[in-house]
Length: 196
View 1 (cartoon, rainbow, N blue to C red):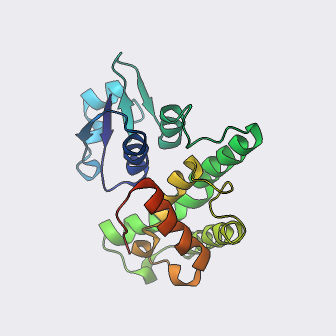
View 2: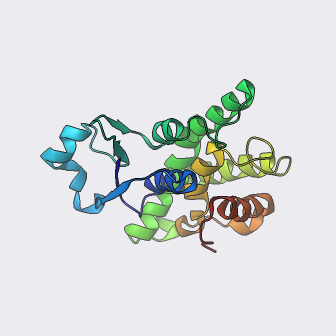
């Protein structure tokens, strides 16, 4: 399997982390999104949306969208709960991450970390919604060790990607004790280096 990705992207790192955690063999194909390498004719034949991550299976089939990829790769593993309702709760968090978390936290991070914007230049609505996402996570993680109960699932992998670097987008994580605890425990469970 080949993973086409940019290690600066949390969405790409999700796929790498799942493969590494599950010891799935892969070849990493580095794609520089800032150089528009996802828009070459060769890449667009693989993924017409021109986005990373994209995986190419040994039989030539390709799959895109980070949460769809990790859901496929982790089938039958300990990263997906066995209980049907717990699986649905995991999926609920996966959909929420792409709609109510990533568009705010990841976008603010991109604008500050890669485009050099100051926090004062960020869209106030994106900042407000990013803090609302962190507050929702804090509320859940004050009750359960991980997002879906007592064990790491794909929900944690998905939300860890940009939450652990939210400070790079101007978000103050110091006010979220449960989120900070969860970041450390999830990083440890996945064997990742600590970022703070």
